[in-house]
Image (tube, rainbow, N blue to C red; front, top):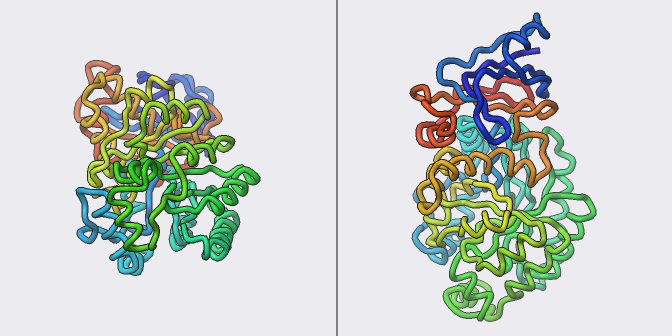
Length: 405
């Protein structure tokens, strides 16, 4: 038994003083330090230090490790410009993304307190690296392919990758990702959703990420028309916005981005019990706009803040993402938004994906991120804001009770 003794602790959505945690691989008891010492006289006492704040481990729900080699290759500023550069440079980036580069990306997440992440895998190449990390990994096997002539072959490969993730163990949670409404044929999509429902696997999908995507799905026109003519000799979208949404009616899904979603689509997502991954830096770099957080809040849609991958971001540091989210939603109350953002990388994603983490609560996994503020806060109510403003890396990190940093 060990006891963590911080100055401040994030618990039940607020911050409290003079509370410590007794833990093994799970949280055993939460109480005053003297009470815990009396109950566990042989426990190791870990004093977290001056101005320390103890959080549950952070959860980054959406990344793409396979493109971690990108730094100055892909083009930003416009979604189609970026997508063209991905297709032109994909093989080179994938070939250069070896295990060491992916491990470096994972280490960056660890340094920023991420104890669980959602990896979207197009080819399965990063599964072995994910098996070796101490973090829990929601491993989203991505389905992609719009050409009906190749559906059977692509779907067969997809099933092989799904099975490999099921057999991986080592903290791997098998999951399914549908790439997008413009890149997955409805026949294959429906098959994949049946697998997800049968095996109770988490689901995610990119949706309404860019103005170009919305125009394509609504009218079959715009820059996506040029793109599909150029690469796929296609002039008609395979589905509509409403039709694509309806496919997921009976399978709660984590919709990625939704920067171009209108209120009616967000209402539908709320009604069907779905959730959202908000990736503000990726959306800015690709010229996609930003998620309407006010409507998301009004509709009580659960959401996570996620970094996306290094194909559309400069880091996988979750604090960088939280800071950006804090800045772009300028109409929100600063203190309340800070608290909401901390929840979006702790309790909210844990509930979305049914994880036994994301909260400081007895019986939860002993996943902890400990940060230090530069000075003692004068108000407990401001700690979330100060954490986002002043933190780049954690002081200590625990996963299932084991000290990682």
